[in-house]
Length: 436
Image 1 (cartoon, rainbow, N blue to C red):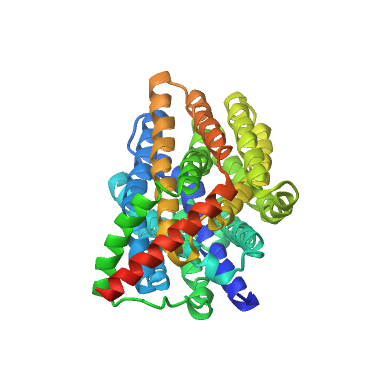
Image 2: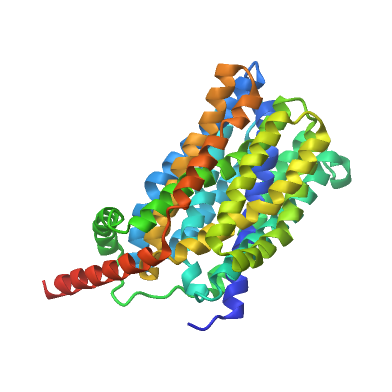
């Protein structure tokens, strides 16, 4: 395939678009606003439990939907349509947070869950379009470019939102509350506007046997069952998915719960927000640089290095006591966060049949979301049981260790052989169905 610069940039800009939700809403203002404005909990530990539960409920919804919708999208060439739907859902629900008043934590959780479903659901089909946009030679670079643009784009809007929060009068807001509520609306607008290039310029390859909507649903459900069984034969894919399940959970949990953790141990909100900004702008060049690092030592080895680094990050987080420690950890996280995400995505494209990309990325995101069920709840439960948020953050090191051990067992050569067998088997089934 020939790499189109217009399509690559347009595809990558979707990371720029939706990362504003990840920074301003998920990592930044929602945890702060939830504990200080919406939550009626009497302690930081209970508020942490509520937030962890909200993240886990969202993860369950996406985990259930991801592979099924992926199968339907592949059968009917509906990747872009599903991406547009989930983007619309995310934008509407995010802007809806403007209307949630103080103490209405249940409504805040509902809007947050639906907005995050929109965010996570859109990523399934965004990721699935990667093999259509980039050739195998370019896939690592394009995946890294997307995350890199995501960090700088999300970081830029987050910087504006932080200024709105710290100096509301500059922007004509009466107080910090009004500024934060307006920040949620700005994320929805940013997300919608910068999604337009992908919608307009990225072409979704139409499958030769693409089905109409009703038949695509029926055949997609059938294909989901077939592929679910086939993953047992594609052992390398299965092992990688298990590894990803564990280690990306640790990464996602740190992203979602870091601000809540800092708040619980007494750091001021303004300092926590500065730390998030540091992570964003360090991660911007690091995501691209980590792609180069992966080329030199191998993508799998680069993933192992990042997993080991995250183990040390969790340990350092346990001992953190001064705000400069939080800033230092923000820098370290920025060095590895984009790299482990981008290379995981591109490494996975090497292991799967590209003609079933949405379906296989459905499983990819499903396991990522099932893992996100474990992480936030693990932190919440350990925090409640021990009475210490420090032991909660330390507990996620278990996930990185298990993920690293499983990743070490992934054999790409064996994967290529089993992939060829899978393609032969699927071609035979297609021929049999066409004869019938």
